[in-house]
Amino acid sequence: MSQTTISIVLPVRNQAGSVASNIAECMAVAERHCDDYEIIIVDDGSSDGTREQVDHLAAAYAPVMVLHQPVPRGYAAALRMAWQVARGDYILAASLAGPAGLAELPRLLAARGENAVVIGYRVPAPRSPITAAYAAAVCAVLGTNMRDPALRLALFRADLAGLLPDKVPDGLVHPEIYTRARRAGMAVAQVAVTGRRGRDSLTGTAMIDLVNYSPPSVRNPQGALMGAMTLAVAGGFWLLRRSRKP
Image (cartoon, rainbow, N blue to C red; front, side, top):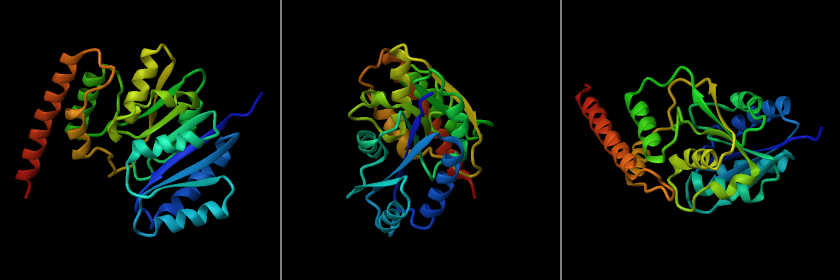
């Protein structure tokens, strides 16, 4: 049986204090669970010494490669850049600062099978009402069934680079690829992972991006409008609750 190579793509920005330990953890997990792997770090215009640290890691460890974006361009641009040079059969896309760590990699690999896309979702689900409202709105806007679109942890077959839209907000990169693969009749899966306490990738920017986003292949414009309205109302309640806290 031929080996499966995994390209682990890790966009980073201003993580000088933690990037070395995070990459060490990533390598330890990959060594145990991957036939063959590479780690592609994309430095997204860091200004705090991260650039020098990741260059040192690439020089010290053969599986590590570094790409540099001279100015911050975001997650979508970083993933697209790494995908162009990745040699893996699958792309593992993740955020080192996100609410799920690379220790969850085995769960995604175990669900690979014939699936073109494997997406993680947190169990237990986040308690935040705004996170639940965001998930409902993403599903309405894209016409999809993702359980946890705010979680940035996914395994993509390497030949799916064309499913990443040219202009897509960072928070909708994984939902778009998952949804497009599913519409194309490809096998996709969602697997439960353990979230890290106190971390959530959902930001106000992600919510604004969703409200303003017009999916290139949207099938249900009324659903998209309702999704945006749902998110706007939920966001209003969330901001009201925050403003009342002492």
